[in-house]
Length: 112
Length: 113
Image (cartoon, rainbow over all chains, first blue to last red; front, side, top):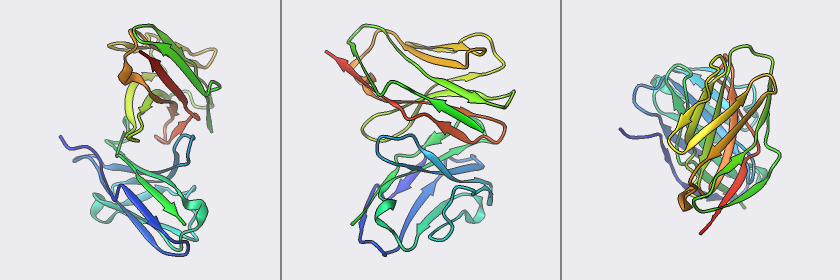
């Protein structure tokens, strides 16, 4: 069984540029999560989807971050415009109805 | 709200020995779950073990076991017969009814050959 797939694995952009991350959850998992992980820290939740509905986006900086999960499967997280402080690892995870979460390999973003 | 505290930033263990990683938590929920995740340098967060708060019996997965002290809000991970592949960052995490995972800051475990 395939795990959570994320792309790209690495991304380097200049500040003020837009960037997008893609996540494909484990087949059958209706809950999808996006986390931000700064160096040497634990992941912090950005947004949680139940199917196509964002049920918890309280930690998402909505002035520059947006996310979507059309059709309740794949998800895209976008930053526009990126700032130097956005450099981090962005993790996607999925679960079945809030059970244990399975994580993807993450995307390491570097903003220069 | 939930908080998870891992006060040890790093630990080292000799190969084949046993090591215990500490974690304390705080929650206002009566029904919650506790987890230990492993994150090697490849960044893939891997679930090591899970404990339901309503269960008194400590969870065990092969060489990994937990010491769950509910009253003390303590949840430590014991790794027996440590192997070189156990070297990684380990995160303690908790989740409540909303399934939001709250992570500690993690501990870096090194294994000496």
